[in-house]
Length: 481
Image (cartoon, rainbow, N blue to C red; front, top):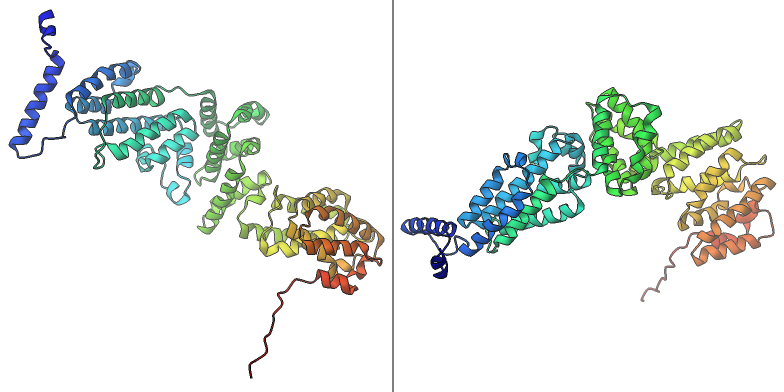
């Protein structure tokens, strides 16, 4: 034995690989096919086979029986076809990810992986998983917790290499045995044997319960306690899942009731971007004439006062209607008691950031000024909080409109009375910080300096000139004779 080693004789495994290579290349040569660069060097194959053992030790015996592509990967690597081995490794990785998805919650996964309504409605069974692109598979499994952030980055690198260095596409990239072994270990650690974290386990349990039993309303706070610990992306993912469950036309009454209990608890944790997407999804349902789903989507948004996230055209129509209701209440009998409801509805539609569609901005500003000023008997105290909230969200251009509102008959007609006059002064104080243009600040200064009652502001020549819209001066050149 020592003599053989001293002479540098090759170990049996290497001899076997070398004999197999010689036989294979001889047959290729006899057939007139290329032989150079077809197989990876023997040393690299040895390195791969020696390193695979470490990765496989992490793979439990009960999981090995189904790992067909791992067997094919090792076989291809031993034969010297590393690019094919990488392809098999990717097949194993994708297969394991799909298996984890199928064992968790298919509907939840599809809602996250395929945001397109047109594509999503055709996906429902485990067989449909093959229709999800690999990059979406990785993203969605990360978002629902079946793949860690670190694992996602590592697996995505393997995906990249599979696309550019495997037998899936022509390439000139040279792979090493150590790379293959490291990627196999990544697949084992980050996909096949990765345990659920606490949030993923709690979410899976909740989703299963939603579909099975009616939740106890008195226990909802306890059931949803883990919502506060959700990372932003996980909260958004769960929100998309609940949204998908509720808008699904085949939902059961139990599912619908359970989602309605959970939705207000999750809403504070959902990001602005996700909320906007729910509004867009409602718009797509409406545009596609999927009215059942559109009604369901709007019900969820209404439940959490999410009208501000409706599409622009929908919001414009709704805001216009609420403005009509508010003016009708303001002009009607007992307005101090009837104004608060439409005022609150308006605040909900305008939302946290004061977004008002261009189509109704002029009407919105004038209506807001009119109800804010009140009438000769005062203002609706129960609605004042809503009015103050809305004025606090005015943009600079909207504040400029407010400042010039005295030119409108409906506004000037109110300003003869002492109580609306006092509110007018307060209104000027509110909008002053929002007036950024020099012309606006000059007008504000002139309005405050006006010695008459504010109902006569529009009659003042200087103020009327300052309040007039700026027009571009046209210089006419004399015609040539």
